[in-house]
Image (cartoon, rainbow, N blue to C red; front, side, top):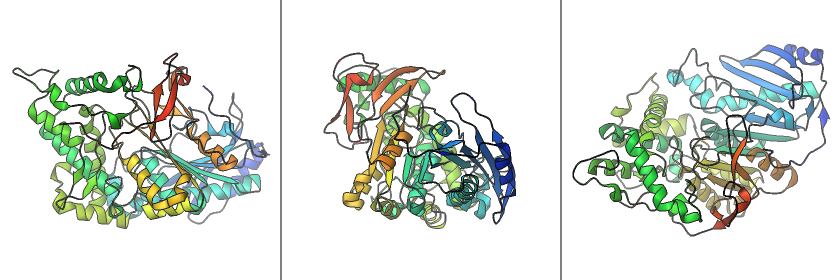
Length: 499
């Protein structure tokens, strides 16, 4: 499926020859070693390009790719998880699997400041320098190398500058906006982490999300939710809320308006995989509720309507890793985390020392400069709580005032973490923000989300509605976006099931 039609700025042809590329091997940058520079011939729809690889001491590996036909665009991609490897530069999640090189972007990415072979998982937490690189330093390091390579190769700088990422890449995007606001014109941030805990956004920040992960891990370890029971909950929710958008298609289009009652699955007499015990109901209810400190202040956001049996694995691994970063140890037993005792350290280090996510003030400043921000999230995400994104969006609407019009939020019904799930899970968000920056047209409700087969064939499409609008069926083929309209409906930010 093609993405949206991009406005095309003046194209600039690169040198397109081997020697001009290999000569970049002599590029001199402080603290940086150029490890290779090679020209890659055109293949199919992908033009020929020059690929430069570099290392910023001690371990930040960086790749920059510069196409023959360059539309004066620069795209920097964020990482994933705890990084350690360079992300897939050929197929970002937010543009229908299209190679950015084929659309005139010079593209760059890094390993996040460390190598996974030397530091698997979050074990780099013992090194403050590597941890600072992971949090934010790698963003600037990558940009410095890419700027120099682009200027040298093309003889001119990029005219339009973009940053995009999902998960840890979404967290990176919040830092790009808040800390490096002058360096990017358009940013796409998916399933990310935003703000600082003292911003009071309700758990969208790194310390709040880590505390929620810890609480979720502890709750599901005490009362495990089996895969069978998680599936039963998910199917019961569909039965209760799926058809609210006008069609029963296995997708809940407006989870905020779904007030499924967990008690409807309460076991009576002999238990089974199709019912929930009282402790299981209480555990799932806790997952889908705010996490508050002793004073009652909300510090963690709720999980959505995704399969609750999936909360434990992501919470344990990611939560333990960020706790290790907060306490400067190679690993952390998440079962030992005590909210009252440890949250102060968590907040002080992740927000204050490392700045793991961009502050609300910094992101607001980015919007006030007229820069464009597209946030997106999967409603069925069971890795990063989906309510994080509507909450940071609401906070930006309040803090940026009229300039909040420079931000858009897209919530994907039925999508998991960055990809996957029952709903359409890809859309040309990169094209949307590019048209907005270069042509002045915001994407609004013009984007189309698609579910693709393993071969890239389109299975189904839906309109991707600008939040708070949701897709409503108006008639026709339910697998086609044209059979739906984006409608604004009244729905409270419940974030929980009725108990």
